[in-house]
Length: 148
Image 1 (cartoon, rainbow, N blue to C red):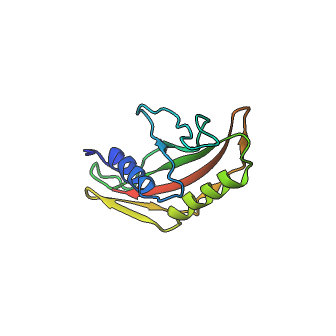
Image 2 (tube, one colour):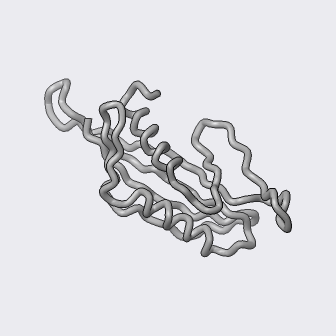
Image 3 (cartoon, rainbow, N blue to C red):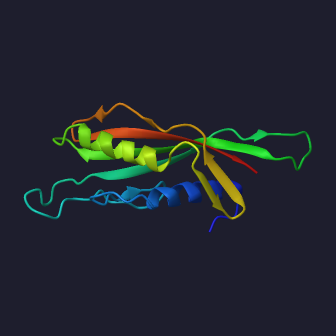
């Protein structure tokens, strides 16, 4: 369990991502944790790379909202989620998954925990597909703010 506002914000955002139910279920790679990219287990694609998600927590500058030493602060930043699909499946599936992630973090979503509230203050942005030799990635940019 997180002990600071900064860590609690990350914890709340990651918990929200973990609660997203997709079909099929996609594994999530979280920053700083060991992760092995999944492979398909069913025929005809058995052993080939499987889709997954990658989450990155990108806090921005904290703003002090008053002159007093104990004044509230505004914590803000980005939760960046990448949908990562193997090449050969086109751009529709990863873009659709990105849209579902964006809807799960809709503008106005508020997350609460350990005395901290985090608000998604803008509609998440689904970016253009990034096509590499072995994968197609579509980024979802989720902007958050927390006043504590």
